[in-house]
Image (cartoon, rainbow, N blue to C red):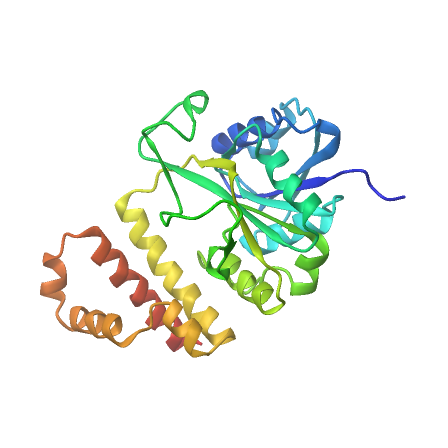
Length: 294
């Protein structure tokens, strides 16, 4: 018997109990009927009491909680997609609070366009806010995507960002799902977007499908994240060793030249205080190490 469920929300998590609780509660208050959607949480064996927190929730819709071995973000998302009962899957992260209209906004486009992916609008928080204070017009929230985009325009594959993205389950499976060899931070979603682009499946922007990235990353943590992104970029390039991907991943001669100069002159590097330059350096440090490994 075919499920009447219209959309499945897939969330991978690992030791994010407090944020995850707020995220789930935001999905319990959607304008879409609770009968039309489900939430699938795939927990990569958290040790922070996530399982106990889930037990005490009072979901308004179907909530499927799965614990599995920690095999990375891609494996968690793939498992969630496998368990999805609906034809449409919405991928979000465990620190992304949903606007009440989020599911409705994703679903209405899929009901009118049969073979597309939908990228919503995610806001980052400039400073700590209470969940009830979140709104697109609040001065302390800024769009994650800084470029000016038109509503419902087609996006380049590089905007395939799974903090707020929906796709048909059949297309996801046909594309080969997320590559579970992406074990370091980053690129597993955009690499899937690149494969979907080659399948001629368009990515559509819906700025009315809103959520909020309720996570603050310190400058030091960002440097570690950039290093890991560099290592993932090396694997991305190994999979698709062409000029387009090489330039997209920042492997252009000028940027690499600056990186090698800084690497050869650690005293000069030590004097740099600009966070953006340090992030770019750490990214290419991870990239070069990853390329050596592969």
